[in-house]
Picture 1 (cartoon, rainbow, N blue to C red):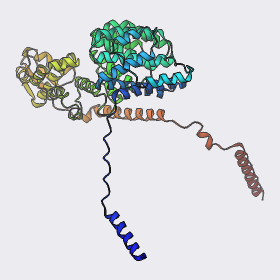
Picture 2 (cartoon, rainbow, N blue to C red):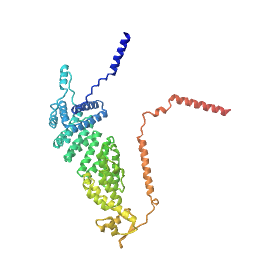
Picture 3 (cartoon, rainbow, N blue to C red):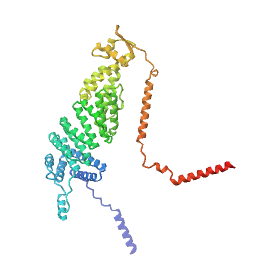
Picture 4 (spheres, helix red, strand yellow):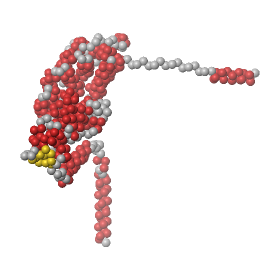
Length: 511
């Protein structure tokens, strides 16, 4: 019966529809990537970037290779055991048996790891009949691999081996004369100097850095010139040779095409040298520019920005200014800047006892930051601030009472301190030497002096300089002005119209 068959088929379809669908098979979680495979892939990517840089001479490929080198170093720090054998395998396959550094590099690393694609590569070479030849290792890629080994030794604490490798690396760099090697040679000088600094022998590499600086100046090597100048300044400052560092600053010019990072370091070192030589205004200008040139991200260059803020706060106090409160209230700098906040509070209030307590409590911090000598100079500023407060509060006060309020160690020096403050214009007062009394003069109207004029002049000069710098920095597309110029036909047409108009006017004048 057709109706029965249709009913049966409808029932079967309904049963199939109502039946629960089979549960899909659960997907297995993806396995985490192998660090060794990622490390090997990054090495190959770096090699490809280096080859493209050598071929095209585009700096972006060199920057990509250097970024990959930083990633390789981080991978080695995160998992040293699986990645170092891969690095050893890359060196064993890239460096020929007669390479002078092959054995030294392999001795500093664990045994090479087996390449997973070695069998496939061997089979492919057999099929091709040996037609494909291995490409020679470029000096740029060779230097990257050697730097990775040097960084692994420095991070692992193997400083004696790292120093010997750094010596060989510097000799290797000096033997080459390739302009494409400049971005990578810069890192070689930096990390070699860092190895010597961590070993406490930074003065041993100074002569090599000076020779490399002379060579880079002759070759117009901007990258190495900026880096070597900063390394030499750091070397002189670590040995307390501030006079030699100042002479180096006076006789050398920092290249304008250098990176912002090297420029920020140069400005920081210049600011520290100028501050130690009592040139506080120039030091403050350099440190302020160094803070602006530093990366503005809160997670980058934290240590450099913190050092610049610490030194900048002391220089501002020595200038008689108070640093901005935002420097001390930021979440990333609040704890490290707390000792310097106590100094600022002591200088602002003129409390010599609070200054002594801050010095005694945080002497180790100031010494570790290299600012102990500058902090000692703040004592005179604290005394001057306290004496200013005393002269504003009392019209007449005995010198012994003023010494007691300032908590001086030697009250007998109060007369000479007050006389020097009067001579420098810190306070407006006179001293009665017979009675031993400090007599304050009445407060003068500030607007009757030249201070408002000087303040306005300073602000106007800043605005004019900012306008001039903005005008100099403006850029225009090439030949943009030519589109507004009329062509020859338009000029002739306009001249013809003007001539016709002049003739018409002349005819009207005749009638």
